[in-house]
Length: 450
Image (cartoon, rainbow, N blue to C red; front, side):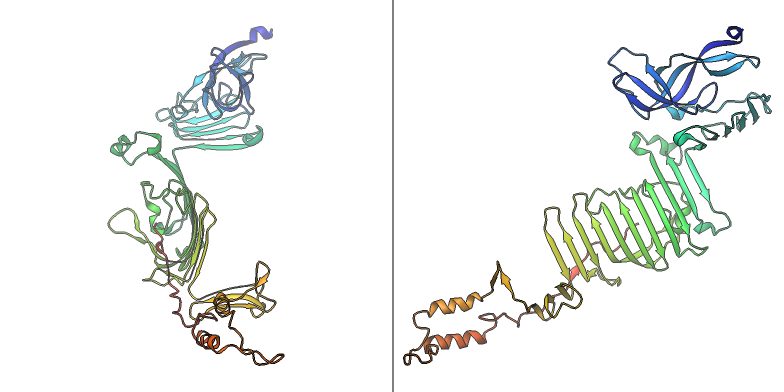
């Protein structure tokens, strides 16, 4: 009797490859469109091709799969996958051209035990609820949302939305400073712009979010991933996307007139760029276009990490009209280290060790080395070379002999030069009469470009 009520019927289903076994030429496929709907777990399929030519399929590809289902029963409909049936991959397809929502035939489709529908016969927009707990909402085009009960792994109790552009906006807020979120694909504002897109690189994708702490726009955080066009205050109503920088991730935290900016992904010396800026003029709405004007910022702190491992850290007072910095340190990937400070650099063991063991470089006073436990090079105490030159020059007439066992003063010939050298800066003692250090550290990138 079961042979009469249930008949094996082949059907073409849509799925995505999640795993590939190169040894057995077997593919693990998630089926999301079939006569019985989306399946809760993966199926295993082989490709209908000659052996050894299946290298073109890979994880993440959308494929059409031939499967066999049991059809019939009292309700005369597809019931389940036919037992012990084989699954075959027919080939790849462009998922963007497929709408995996069932098209209605009338404004109020007939309901049955498997699903309840409320759809429009002209547009195809509607809602479908199934007996296994699935819900599908569709606009009749490529935009739909689906909720699935049960399932397994990351597909268990899943809600999925497919659309080219998704927006979420917090209502009851100032239109210019709405807290909002956008995730989308931009292919052009009109037919003319769309026609200029030739390669995949011409289609920009980004995810961006803008959230204010209160309804006031001077305390906010902004996130942008993908094509670089972050939401910033009055820029929130932009209808076009134009990649301004080769930056993949941006996070901006603005607290009143202080702004923290973190950028990552630029394939230059600032592959990772961290800045703290003083906000001189915040973003304003431009009366001449759909976008807002950019703000004006003066840098107070910056850290850049290049794609080759070069590091630059600098800080300043954030004063406008000057690119001067108070501190700058650079580390090259080759191992070179440079430290610049406008006033003084002190190296010691701790806060209270400056008077014991320390090196202080002061822009006005020069360099002081304090080594109360001894100053040695290669384990030996230091001797001034010019003093040794003097000693070597007069080694045969250094002392004046008076009497055996008596004092031996410096010979008058050597003594005269010793007195002259001791009074000249830099001859025997270090020179403390030189010009003070300039203390100028120039930053060529003090302004933040948005």
